[in-house]
Image (cartoon, rainbow, N blue to C red; front, side, top):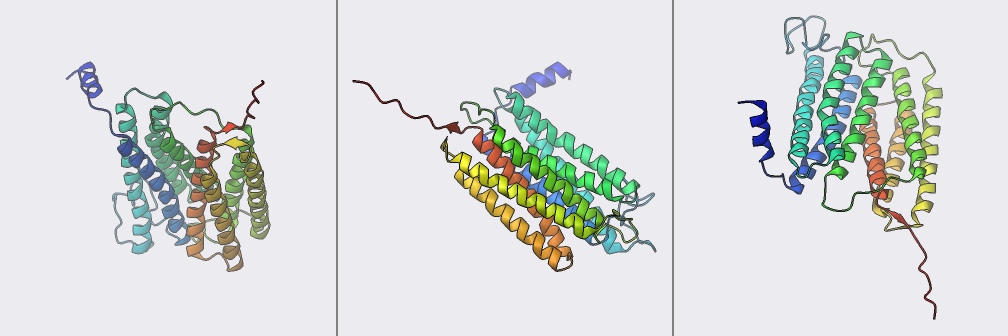
Length: 309
């Protein structure tokens, strides 16, 4: 069968339902967020080098095997994270297929959908490099930050599924400030992690700066981010049909994330709270991106002209 014939057959397939497309897009968001959390579990359990090579777990074996230097539990935690990456890739690929089958094709929707499987491949490569470099803190940071980008794009994908209505306009410039501050929160968070006790392996060198100082810088970025959201709230009062629910969810998630961070700092960075903090960061990204998409369709209030007599 020629390529042209195959393409013609694909083009004759019916457009997937809106519900199916949105459902798969939401699954992409969920799996992208969860893979970041499972990565955190790998780190806090010291399982980052449970499989010391990549793409194999050990030289000559794709799966965990009895080894005098690597505990079986640590091997399966790391290997399980790699297996979950496969599920993330399958769902990301499904999202692209559905976007390709949508008629008429929407270029923005298709580009975001294509970014999902491509991003999974890039993330897998970054993960392999991280293992090959023995979990150097900055490689782990890049690995996590790549996940944050994927979660943001996946959230945009959910809102990009065509609904048969007027395309949304551009987001207001005011949202650029909290978005940039969120990037600062995430970057400083990875620096705190790099200097903290959970490096993925007991022998991994840590970022050589005081973790307390980095934690205070990270907290200051979070407070500034929260302050910028208060200003956004005042701006929303001057728009038609403001997305108040999305705004309120974002505020609630940010406050909850800050509370987890404080408890985590006061209690000596316990493993469970570290994993929850990473998941909370993904929730903050989803909520911020959702608000971004919500205000794209908001319009400034315009005073009605008084009719003349």
